[in-house]
Length: 114
Picture 1 (tube, rainbow, N blue to C red):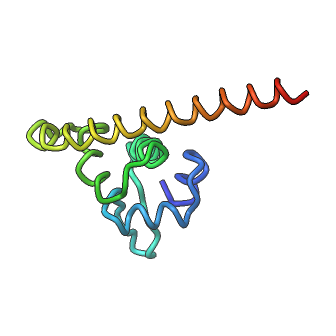
Picture 2: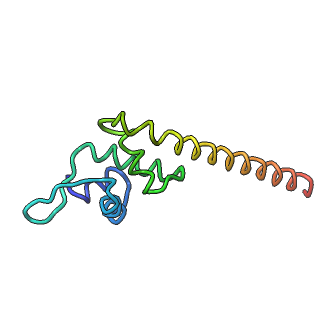
């Protein structure tokens, strides 16, 4: 599929798709006319990239994590990133707790000042 179709199917901008490819997270074949041609599995790859970026992974870490999440899993590579993923998870959970505490404080403030 061409880049416009991949963009439409995933909700990722064409610019983002080019960036993912530049970072080595996504691959395409070049047609003779110069257009990028992505395999059907690229949809799942882009969905995984976007989800992992949303939770705070960097593109550098994504290069290691992505093979563990989509397509053919590289079992040899995956254990090496488990510690990094666990640390990220702990950080996300810590942030979520702080946000929940802030939300509780704001709710109490609004309740007390009405």
